[in-house]
Length: 189
Image (cartoon, rainbow, N blue to C red; front, side, top):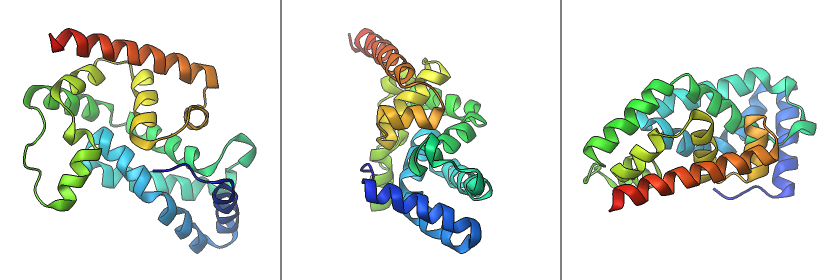
């Protein structure tokens, strides 16, 4: 989940551009970013829903690849922006998920090794208090917090992904952190 280097960004742009002429080249973009996008979506919606949403994300990216404008940002935040927009279509499922996690807590025995690893990096491993706190955030604030926390995007990349000014990301993140701290401090006593 590390940020791509300048070379990686240029490679992404070149791959995406070449995929317009040869659709098979898009496979390299998919291979490079699938795991990070899936981790982010699974953290928001759960692993079962994530498979479908990530498939939708890459299908939408494939269809829009000719309209990608590197002057407006890089491929990685563009993909996370598409995923975040698709998550919005599943907002009720996300809210129900946080409410359920807040009530019952995380599964103490998620199963095999792969499931345990996924549980650690997704909402499955969240404490009920954190789930309640995240569920109480506005959609816009929650998007910023989870793009930073689950995908490791920088403030600039979050701004690209959401199509908002850089300063707005900082404001939303600070507001969300204050709200999360207040809820977690209040419930911790």
